[in-house]
Structure formats: structure tokens, C-alpha cells
Image 1 (tube, rainbow over the protein chains, first blue to last red):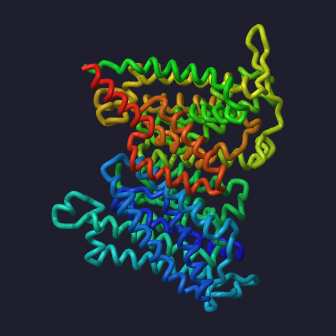
Image 2 (image 1 turned 90 degrees about the vertical axis):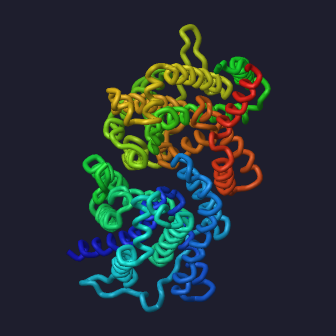
Length: 286
Length: 322
């Protein structure tokens, strides 16, 4: 029973990180139609920048506040100078460009911070463990489990009730129509891409105390968040939420119960979902 | 009218002559690199049959490449130490896998197809990685004797780099001729029609899924063949050969060289490996350069390097003819 609950908490905390990243990915895809391969690298960059700020200031919160906006600023340059020339062209070019960016960023990070893994301590208030039945459980993971839905709720409210959120949804639904009624789509695209990058980097900063910070962390999460987004239905928020939770739980229970198959579980699940519901759980009809 | 530029047969003749005489004046080191280029070029061409011709972006092509490698090594280890049998086994084994995976995958398209094939490819990777007793786990299967090439009257050892180079060259040329034949056939025309507008293909009464499935199986078989050559070349079949990042290499080479031309992927493979060897000779972080070059090429050469070159040559040729 204790193991079961611990598994659920572990799954949820990883799921919440996946959720943050997937939301950025799915927003960028929904509005711009760009599937960003470098999204995992932006997540990783967020983690490294957070670590760097923690080293400078000694405070995790500084990293959480100042890291992600730097990544967002960088992604404004990426959108403006690299992605924008490609909008008229085949989707595969965007995929390839962002694939190239991924290689660039991954190796760039290795060049700056070295190939070793780094540990970031959680802030004092979230450090330590709490008693959990007969065992103990890290407070930081519980913090993630609580924070995830809050961020999700905030985003949902932003998209449902604010003017900007409505503009975004309208542009995602029909870009041409949005342009006709006066939405300045180029600026919107830049904003959306930066917003997605900020979410990814936020996830990365939050992940820093949860796992070790290392050069391979972007590659793992990008594939898992692709799966989340596809399972949930591309461009769907509730889909990203449910997909992330399922993948997080599959991950933690798989490791305990069927360690041999754990690596294949996300892919198996992906195949089952796509073969029964080709547009994902919350996707529209094909 | 659209008279073909007369230089092409000449160019291909020169290319062929160059490739045939290559080992005479290149060092063994470069012969090995060209062998690798040709093998990966064949793999990338198999991917391009789906991507460039049919419009299907498969991110799981490495699954068939790696499966071909394992099938060839299984064959040598457990069936008989025959090179031909190993190559045929790899081809057929990969084709059967592609039939199963393709049957499930081709009903989807675009991004969904890409992600689903990625998923199936990673399942194969997991099998190769975790089924230790059969596949040797992450160490792979490396302990096998290289079979000799049996040409009715004489046996050739392919252990020698030059011999192996010619074997690969012959297989790759056969692959190129085969692909050339396919893309120029009515079937090839259907593939391109599928890429341009899949709805219309269905409307005229063609079985869209069948066409895609056939392309998928052919591409899988070719990838398996390339994988078998790669395993013999490196004397190992390892799980990395099935990993999605390996599929990414095929995508990269194809678009680097040009997906619209038959030899584009091979040109891409050549650019890739020459750049890799050149850049790693002065720095360890070659990926950062590759990434930057890739970004640059995507922005500057929308048709890939060979594709842009061919378009330019075509324009010159037309200018002269008319």
C-alpha cells in the first residue's frame, strides 16, 4: 500500500513536469503548426540556467524567476530569424531546423557546462522529507504535485477568460480569419513561441532539484512530451494534462512492477491510443 | 520542350568510374569512410522512398535498419555462415516487420505517422536492448566470423576493406537501379500522386493504404539490407542502430542532400561524413557545428545541396537546348 502511494506520487511529480513541457509544445503546435524538436533542449537550458543562478545567488527562487525569461528571449531570436523564413514551406523543414537547433543547443550546453551531471538542492523550505507511513517522502516532489495543477489552472484561466487567451485560441482555430479581423499574426507567433519556450524552461528549472542536471535530459523529455501531446490530441490542453499524468504513472509503476518492459511502455501505450483513436484522446475528429 | 540535359549520362558515367577506381588512389582510411557513406546512403534512400516520394515522414526507419543488422548476424551465428543468406534474411526479416508495423501505421499521416513510427521503432529498440539472452543487450552481438563471398567459382574474403567496399558498391548500385526503376514506374507515379494529394488518389479509386503499405515494405526491406551491410562492416549489431536518433540521421542526410532527387540522400550522407571527419579532426564538439550547418542549409538550400545543384544544372541545360 505504501509502495503503491509512493508510486502514485512519483508518477504524478514526473507527470507534472511533463505537463508543463507538453503545454508549451502543444500551444506552439496548436497556434503555429510548428512541431518544435528543440523544445526539450529549451527545457534543458532552463535547468542549466537555473543551476547557474543558484550558484551565483545561492537561492533556488532566483533561478526559477530569472532563468526561464532568458530562454524565452533567446527563443524570440530563434523565431524571428530562423523559423520565420520557413513558414511558407513544407513542415519537414521546420522539423529539420528545430532538429538542427537541438543538436546545436545540446552540444552548446556540453561545451559551456561540461559533460558531468550537476545537483541542485531544493530551496530550504522545500528541502528534506516528510514521514510517509513507515517511510519518508521528499517534500519537493509533493510541491511539484501541487504546483502542476495550479499552473495548469492558471493557464486554463488565461486561455479562457483573458483577451490574449481568446486571441490565441482564435488564431489556433483559423489563422487567416484571425488575421482578417486584425490580429497581428507575426507578433502573435513570436509571442507564442517565446511563451512555449518559457514554459519549457520553467519545467526545466523546476526539474533541476527533482533530478540531476545533465546534457542528456532534453533528449529523454522531448520524446516523452511528443508522446504526451499525441496521446492527448495535438493542441489540446486537457489532453496534455491527462496524457502527462498517464505517462508519469506508467513510468513509476512500470519501473516497480515490470522493469524489463518499462522502457517500452510509453510507446506501447502510444500505439494502442493512436490505433484506436487516431487523433488522440481529446483530439477532434480526423 | 523538356529535353533532358544531355550531361546526365556523362555525369553518372564519371561518377561510376570514379567510385570503381576509388580504392586505387585513396588510402584505406578513406575507403572505409566511403564504404560507410554508401551504406548509410542506401539507408537514407530507403527512408527517402517514403519521405521524398510518398510524403510519409517515418521516424522509425532505424528500426528496420537495426532489425536487418540483427537478422543478418543471427543468420550467420545460428543458420549458416553464408553472406548471401545473411543478406536475404535481413531483407526478408525487415520486410516482414515492415509489413506488420506498416499495416498498423499507414492509416495515419503527417505528424501522427511520424510519431507512431517513432514509437514502433523504439519498441524494437527496447526489445533489442532488453532481450539480453538473444540480442546480447546493450553490448550487441559482435562475436561472429565474417562470412566469405561465394561467387560460384571463387570465394572472396570480405575482411579486406577493398573487397568489402566493392561488395557494398555493387549492392548500393543495385539498390539505386531498383529505386530508379520503381520511381519511374506507374507505381512510382502513384507514390508521387499520394505525396501531392492523397485525397485525389482515393477519389480516383486507388487503394491509398495499399500503395503506402507497399512503399513502406519496400523501404523496410532496403533499410534491412543496408543494416546488414552496416553490421558486417562494423562487425557488430547493436541496439543503437534501432534508436530514433539513428532514424534522425537518415532524415538529416536526406534533406541535407535533397529529398527530390534519387541520389540526394547519398550526397547527404557524403556531406555528413566528410564534415564529421573534417570537424572532429580539430574539435570534439562536432554536433554544435553540425547543428549550425544544418540550420544554415535548411535556410539557404530548400531543395538540399544536390537538389539545388541539379535544379541549377537543369536550368543551364535548358537554356542551351532551347
